[in-house]
Image (cartoon, rainbow, N blue to C red; front, side, top):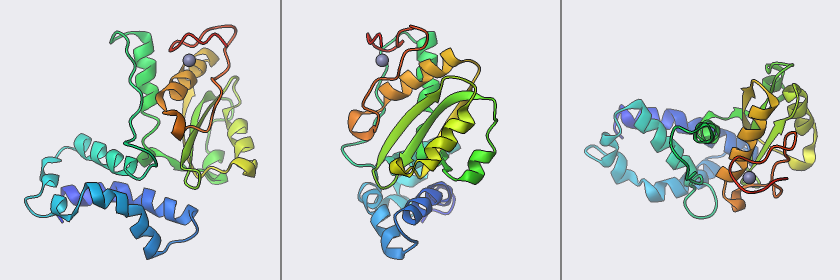
Length: 214
Ligand SMILES: [Zn+2]
């Protein structure tokens, strides 16, 4: 394997493989291999060998993108692509869309544990994205008031819908959390999203990304 690019990439990839394996029942070589199988198909050993294509990924940004794509190969269905937002660049909505899309890479997710939850600001509002390794699906949500921490803790205690890793973002006000949640909802393809219903409106305000006026 190429010593520099390959090492950085696997350094980022491996926590995902480790957590997934652990969540699926144990740290076994067999499970590691199963998880890595779809990645190997797309990026075979020849990619990593001396002189292989991996040498093109020299910048940290391109390596991060490569890792995110490799993780996406392990998700069910066709290629995992977040939905595009057809709106003028530079608009407020485009910015919200962009911020929301940055919450998805599983490389950045935290372990969904009570330890991690205890570090979250108690009076914050915000949005969150869960991922379940067993369901292989995402769940998105928001806290309408400054109770993000207790909302996350409630989800944690509710074992019916068990999630393994998560990401979140603090928001300045409930309207921001509403708009970001709508973006999160629309970014995901239906088959990868547990939420079936469109996020609820905030004080009668419409979703910025569709005609839904719920
Ligand atoms: Zn909508």
